[in-house]
Image 1: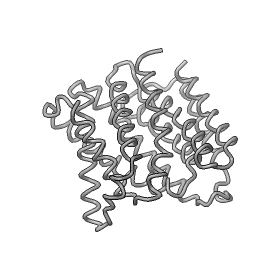
Image 2: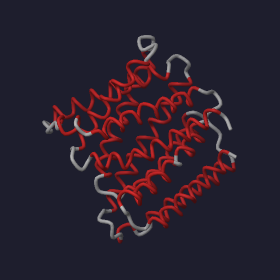
Image 3: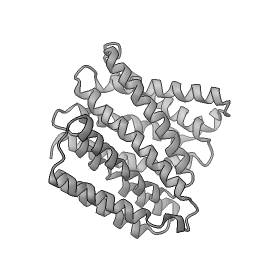
Image 4: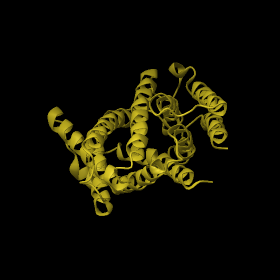
Length: 283
């Protein structure tokens, strides 16, 4: 198995474990404060290992700003929705980003979509459809609108994932420099939005919550693995996005263990259908 594939599997498992942590934090801290503190602490963690931060070409820096803007909106949507959705449902639905990233990889990065890739995509779509079929009749306390907002978040995450590959494949920036500027810009965006909206900044609650530091470290370490994988010429957005969906298994299992959520068997079956698509793509 190639190194970049291992990096992406580890990234997926880290990502899946972050959703229960986010939901725990959001019980006591509002969305915007959580996002600002989470990203700013992550930025501070990334600073010591950052290299080449002042060697970024202007056009690449512009794309980092676009990436940051897409994640700015994506995370506001996903954190807001996560307060309403069971994390197991969130984990399965979040897998829809594979559809958007695959299509963007084909259209914008001219990656090929093989017959296996098409079958993989069909399996992913099937798993998502089964998971969210008749969502309006669910008994878990959320509405169909929450699912659509999560789909929009996944679309924006797909834009970010495609830009990651484009930026890192340019060979003009280090992964640590991308992380440095991305986290700094994103932190400033959230702070500016808080000030503009005159939202309550619950710094004491956030800074005294130990889980927010765990969350930030997981983000920094996971993204570093992701950027290293993107810098490998052999890696492809279409395949990486499929592998990332291993995160759903961790999210669903933790949803059952930590929150005693219902319909876990159905959600696991849906996730396994999607994982089958992932396995087909990388074999």
